[in-house]
Length: 438
Ligand SMILES: Cc1cc2nc3c(=O)[nH]c(=O)nc-3n(C[C@H](O)[C@H](O)[C@H](O)COP(=O)(O)OP(=O)(O)OC[C@H]3O[C@@H](n4cnc5c(N)ncnc54)[C@H](O)[C@@H]3O)c2cc1C
Image (cartoon, rainbow, N blue to C red; front, side, top):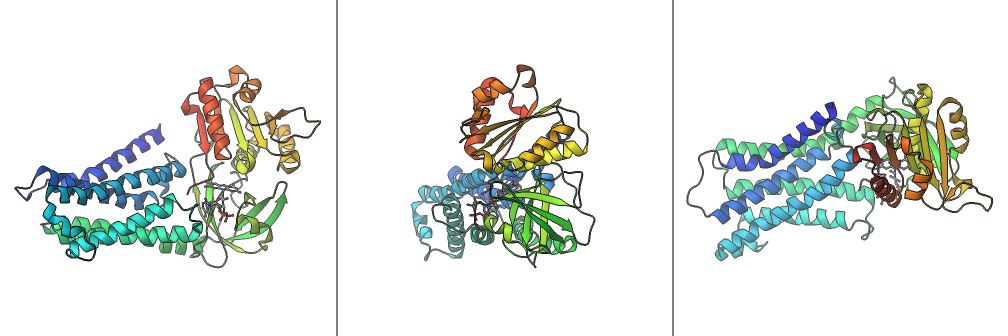
């Protein structure tokens, strides 16, 4: 209930912030004698700009803002609403010119006045952000450099948009109105400074060290971290943290990984990491003693947030890591609630944690259903993919009121989500974690 209220509060605040420019414009003195379309286009520009400004708050990883929804949902929203904001900003000059074609000269990036030139720089930065984000994979842009350019271009866009607003002078005809717009832009630049400089500086006080790198089956390693000069980190089972490795917390490379260890153990954190790309393929070579910095815990995918009489966990591949955290935590807490785990993988030889899952059955009321894509000849269990038939064959009707947690490859998650919906499982009983934020 608290989270619902908190979610409602943040949505209301968001709406207020977005509508703020229009309310602010209406405070006298208001310029008289302007056409509806001119006023409308200015309102669009202001609302678009405020939306861009709010994006800085959304991506600043404030746990109070992200907790009610989950950071993946916030980032998905960020991607979609930012496009709406850019569209509003682009329509703003189009209406201005249609309303009075004499203003066409302002559309020349090298002509016009300083106000229009500033607008051009801002729009160009926004266009680069959109193209590099939408086509990042097709353009083969390195993830870390894309993130840095995203922030730099965002700052350029907001600063030059602010210059445009101040120089255009519409609705900034009092010191107070000017102060609010300049203050908003300064605040957003300040947020970037906080995220990239102040927060890493604070992380130096809470360093971690690599205590062990343990190979698991299926190209997976368990990275174990221990606190250096502090007591550790409290987290909820299923949450995740951004990890930076190396001497400096100011490094641009950081990766999100789910805690795979028990939330009851705060001074020895474990992360199950599957070799997939540049960084993850090198995890096995990380020397013990390497410095680490954590930003977390983040995320809302946790059994602690969704109490239920029992659980159905559905994991695919490395999506098992937050589920291991659930199970290890429940075992440490001697949690008696029944758990049914579906665990999808390609081949039996490459399924990590199978021995431990057998051991966990001794402490927990746990049943595991493996679903192998490529099963051995003598396999008697489920094969293929997790679909509606597999679920209905293994989940007795009386167990459908349980809470479902799904984590795995996107196609699996979408298929399982759809299958549960078709079976009539309410949306509120389904929690999902996607391992892709970009
Ligand atoms: C909430 C969350 C929890 C996760 N938990 C786990 C886990 O427990 N175990 C695990 O093995 N993997 C986990 N991942 C995935 C893991 O973060 C990526 O596999 C890893 O960052 C890829 O880095 P790379 O350099 O090896 O791959 P690359 O080849 O560089 O990248 C492959 C793709 O991974 C994504 N990616 C790369 N770097 C990052 C980054 N810094 N942040 C976000 N995405 C990135 C990009 O979409 C990229 O195209 C999780 C991801 C998220 C979002």
